[in-house]
Image 1 (cartoon, one colour):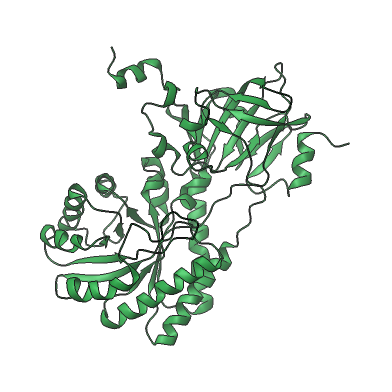
Image 2 (cartoon, helix red, strand yellow):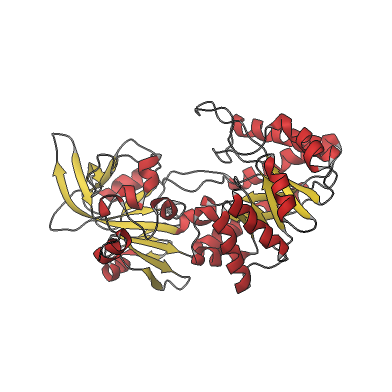
Length: 460
């Protein structure tokens, strides 16, 4: 009878996989020796494998370039990284090695862009696409960026007032985009996105508020849906509606030449994850080309804004199982040495699932467990995997420490949890490691100390 954890995995999935393999009884992730990492740095431990960022960018650029060639698609393809997924300098530095552009969402983003321009990492030929609802400081910062010479800044208009705000703040001519307020899936609590301008209002908005202003060039129509790029009727229906708007807008605005299809390439959240990226890239361009050809207009240049896809699969968190609590006849709680609410807030807030695997003891027998965090909050737990409503791990043995890893955690988690700040129940933030192409590990930040926390709270 096969009762070992390795048996469970090999019977359930194709294993090993590109990024996951075993070295003896120890797990490797993208070739990283996790055993050595834990032995040197302890747990809890967060890490980023920087080369994965460049690898994913190059894959996506390759899929779209291949599709362009096969379809004879004459528009260009422009890969943007949306900084809100992770603002760290080391993330932006790695991403910008790959001839890409930047998408921003708030005022401080522009300060980051200006810093990167000073370093020479963002040059005048790179687009800065400015999204989001724009308060006064965001408007001022965007205007400063344009007035200081970065003319490839595209302000994506989110509401009617922004046209006048930027006309007053920016000197000379400037380029804008308009964001479509897309309709949401039926499961949402509202029908239409709060961001952007409605489908039926965009052409009238252009004709009455944009076209009369000779300083403004409308370059881009921006389309984004929360569910991301999925091969389902909802996505294709919304894309078709967007293309009809683009066609109608192009007929009255000849300078319009770009379509931003937003973000949405998914990342791996289970060992049984499947997604045909190459097919989706080609099918998107095909749908765009078909409609443009039918209407007799040139195909647009394509912009994408990939955030989670860019950085998500570069990250991981490793915990140690401290203790097992048996609360009744069926529930075994494996307690980790940190908190899910503070280190993986999406697991708590939106029940997001990540790839979770043990780092060691793969040849031990397994059991069904629940995972509990250290806070006193009843919601600080992780209770199922993406593919099954359960968690299985090697059996708890106090004499044989068990380490577990959560992988592909690199997007949003640090921003949402408030990196460097105060966490729920004052659970300290873990040590954070950066790993380069030579597998050299560098400590970016040490685990929070009590003095770090007291200083932030105003104590002596």
